[in-house]
Amino acid sequence: MTDQQFFKIFTIVSLIIVFIAIVIGILSNIFASYSIHPSQNYQSLNQENELTRTAPAGKINLASNPTIEQTAAAAQVRESICDSMEGEFITHEVKMLNANSSGAMVFEPSFIRINTCDSINFEMVDAGHNAETVAAPEGSIAFNTMYKESTIIQFDTNGLYLYQCAPHAMMAMAGIIEVGDSNNLDQMKSEIEKFESNVMIPEVKTRMSDLFRQNVN
Image (tube, rainbow, N blue to C red; front, side, top):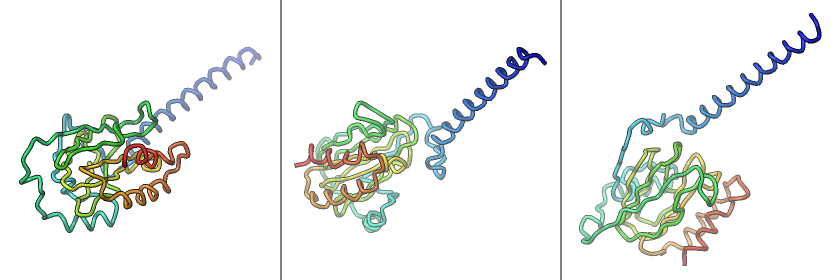
């Protein structure tokens, strides 16, 4: 075998190895993006235009926070003040995104102020996200959108709510909702501090406390 033949074979083999490595990398990324929450199997992603309405504020208790779970369980059967209130209630929109102009793994908007008995439609624009309660006013009920494409939550308890995307909480993917007023201000400051202690990305470590400081009086 001549040197020219050897070099030609070596080049072909090298190209094949590089091609295989690229294919394996692509397949690994695809698998990782759909295995964040294997227990969910992302069934909702296969259901077009799926819309789930939950009222009031997360009637089905699916939060991961034990304290919130106990509160929700005790409040499951309570009546909502929205059942007897008159007026036009608004449905606002919050998108779950992989990125926007403010950074990666975000809710848009990350802070929203609504009136009592208004609702929020959480839209999973990018796959692999949920919105679930981290902390909320006393007497409220926890919520979890369970990776559905669209979930409407009605809020009947005034105060501040901190919620997160469970798979991306360590990347500070969270949001704050103010319903009516900020009567649980001190509680929320403490809860945000706890949340940020688990954020692993230095660049967004103070994302929630900055958001709180800029928007909540």
